[in-house]
Length: 307
Image 1 (spheres, rainbow, N blue to C red):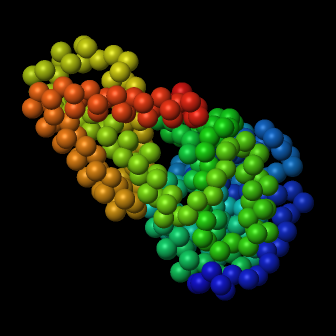
Image 2 (image 1 turned 60 degrees about the horizontal axis):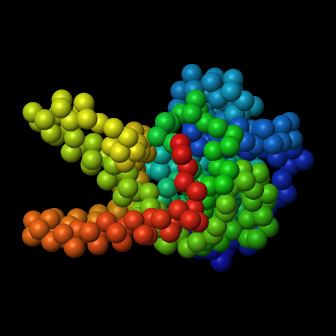
Image 3 (image 1 turned 30 degrees about the vertical axis):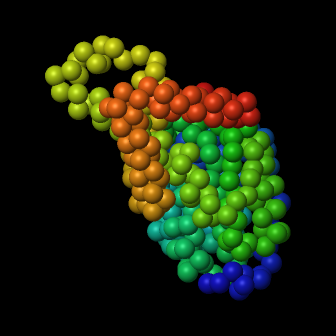
């Protein structure tokens, strides 16, 4: 379905907006907690989780008003559907819920990759169902609704990817809800989003996992290495504790950018290896000095999430 065909004006939000969260885990649960904290009974939130126990816990914590495995009950009357399962499950889930969506419903997501999702969705969405690609750049190494926080998005970057053809009225209806998170919203091209996410998120996660693998492969030195583990190792490998399913999906759906940037990183490390083997102290010094200067400059303008 081409963007040009999406000319229908959506129906207005209900007097009490209805939000469906598919995947009430860390991200979906945090959105639910935030909106219930801000709006209370002025919004009704339904949720779908992986297990009955998770759905019960999501309700107990107040992230949703109703949690059920009945898809029609979750999305049937929803004005906005927030999709927060692993990336490779988003399109199959949309296919399942499409028959139950009302005209004018707005789909948005929290997927860490965007081009793959939009490429698939634009082929199946009818002209009166709208998709606005989103990516809240917030998270923790812990997962599940138990790790959710109503303040998770506050002050964090939240990407709204351009180019999915939703009319301005639809965009504003969604943003009226999402702005309550107090995130820092920015709009960028979908392809640029995936390239940038690869550099600042995807490759760092792979690198953190590589450092843990390096330790794990230390052989006879492993026990001694473990006794020496301190803050530096813990800090640089913290994100290696993230959900494996989520990160496998990310690699499968942003493979070109990730592979390119991993090769770039390989080249950088190759240069450092050569400098060390050649006893080129100046080259090694410059390597550290330039990276320090760049990071210090970044720290002047960006507040990092301590979690």
